[in-house]
Amino acid sequence: MGLIAGIGLLIIGLTGSLLVFPDELDAISEPSLFRAQATSLARLPLDTLLAGVEKALPDHDISSWLFDSDPTAVDRVFVVKHGYYVRLLVTVNPHTGAILGGPLDARRTFSGRVMELHYTFFAGRVGTLVAGLFAALLCLLGLSGFWIYQDFWSNFIRLRWRASRQIFLSDLHKTVGITTVVFQLILGFTGAYWNIPSAMRQLRYGTGHPTKMTGRHWSRSISMDALLNRCQHDLPGFQPTFIGFPVVPGADLQILGHTGSSFRSDYGNTFTFDSQSGVRKGIREIAKAGLWDQITDTFRPLHYGTFGGIFVKIVWCAGGLTPGLLAITGFLMWRQRRFGRKPNN
Image (cartoon, rainbow, N blue to C red; front, side, top):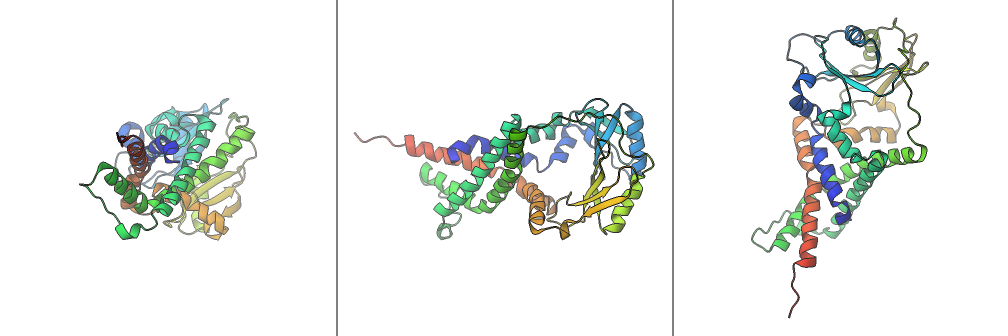
């Protein structure tokens, strides 16, 4: 399994390490688009920001809006041109309302390219399935390695530097594998859980016919700031992270966010509003959801290491390199065993 999954896990591991810091990498690679100048100014009202984007892009409509709590980060707004269905990214300085860049294909940003390679190997639905199978193999490799080295406590973290190359590779492979086995299981299971069912649905039913944008489908009488205040009143501590605007007539308007819990995703709580009247139609609190929903809501912070600040993110970034290291050491061990010994004369 290791030989089969080796190259795939190497790619997934390297790209996964980068994706622990996607916004930071975008800000470094394209600071003019993804970094707002530090300022003492507070965020502008959302209604003001919305009006600014609509005025600047009269032939587009907004499909979603993503917030960021970092004061130097930009808001990411997705828009669709009238008569088309492709979502394009626009970056907005939330303190000044200035549009910094776009509309542009989000997949062409640095983090977008890395994300597509990580999840699909640039191969669409088939690549999504292959990446999911690699993730499942990572789980199986972790379990089988733990079984093989179940007596590891007797020689825990032993690296015999002066021994033969075969012994050193074995020690390194065992030490890295055992010390990170829980990490490998988390990454493997969550990755497989996301990719495999999604790819199977797409392969079986297709992606459907994309809906073309025909105009704004929510009432101009609705104040988004009023809806955000309503959310924070109804759910104390609520912090919005995402707004989904209706892209077809009759669809609802949704506001997603979190309440600051470490092992909750940024999108676990959902408010649903009527897109014409602004009346609240429902609320989904992840803390009151079913057990499995609460478990799956932890997958995102566990997969990306966003639950414990910068230290955990650095650990997750380093941990993302371990599948590749295990693939390399495993291959070298196999090669040494198969070709390293010369037959006796």
